[in-house]
Amino acid sequence: MEEPEMQLKGKKVTDTFTESICVLANEPSVALYRLQEHVRRSLPELARHKAAMQRWEVQSQGAIYTAEYDRRAVKKVEEEWREGLLHIWLYKLCTMMPS
Image (cartoon, rainbow, N blue to C red; front, side):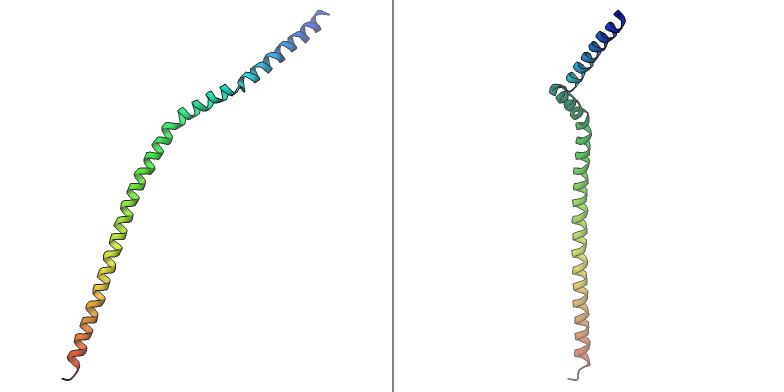
């Protein structure tokens, strides 16, 4: 008769122990500790990623400035070319007219 009683007491002890471990594992302070550890591990990688994105942004702004400058230069050359053609056309038109 002692063996079933011992098994019942053993089961009670292990169940209580398991429940205590679950309660401790889900304690808010443990969750905060886990969150702190996650942040501590993740933060250096996030900082490197942020620095890389900032460098990319600077390079992109430089490329955008260069492209905009080139666009304006091409537009100015195009306008001057059209104006030159207009002058040539007017000159030819004036030289062809009788005086």
